[in-house]
Image 1: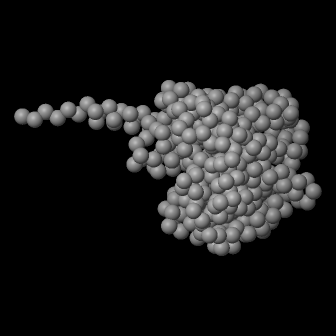
Image 2: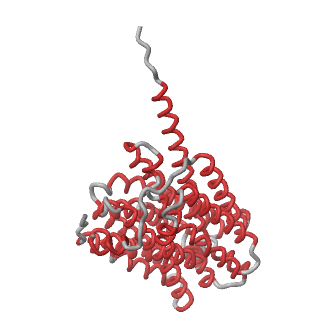
Image 3: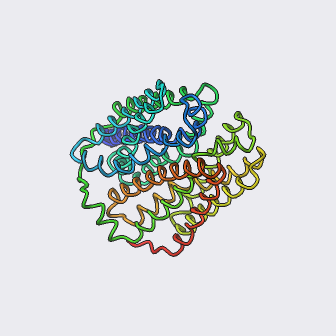
Length: 395
């Protein structure tokens, strides 16, 4: 009779299971962070009214963390290069949770902006470090799936977290929404401390790596260009989607539902793009841009009814839901041997575009008209397909 010792396999299974629990903890963290960064999109009007600022000024709640995240994404990665990655992620997610709780208790707009600055630091640093963390947590054969799960936190926050936060804000007030995200961040902190193993750094990124990958890789430059156009155009318009719908006569209670519809459509767009982008990257990028352009134009022309607005937001959600997985895949495919440096540049460009879009949208709302942001956003999105089609994805 032969006795087979299965203890090593069982130990390996336990290690794999714990690694996946750690991946899920990181995913929850990045979901909390991105929801936190974008939450004001659905709450501009109530926050502005409560703190006595205009909607254009309230848009700084999106601009400030975006700018800070753009600058700190590579800097935090470089500065913490010798520190255990678990500790870095835990500190950053804890900072985000505390900042959101401070926003929920704030009695003046400058206090909210100060808290939003801290959130920008958290977002930039966490996203850059978390981008390659799956490689350290699960077996090699499972790394692609684990990486997709981690970045799924970004996508889900963009297309579902913000609408859900808006809906919660409509039910219990904007302070409740900020507090809920803060508590979610602290839950993420607890789970990371309990579930993540020590993750010592294996290679330190230097500032010299960033211009090197930018200069030497045409595919990365093209990916950053399309990211800039699409994300700037999207947030230029989407930051002010609530006042746009209000100006069209859509009831406040319906707006929360419409944004949830946007989120559901976005999840569908994410799955569709994930199936297409590996084999057809240029066509997928072009399709995303076309959907976004059509949605903004449609909302500008026929947004007066809840049904028409719903159709426009479904198209918009399908297009934007595909953005993170599509563009991240482009960037990593263009720089397979410099993924950390390329990801840092991508995170910086993504967040800079969020900030610039929200800022330019605020200027347009204040000086032209609320619906002008839809036309400007559509124009930027429409510039993307030629860049995608003509780009040579150099490696």
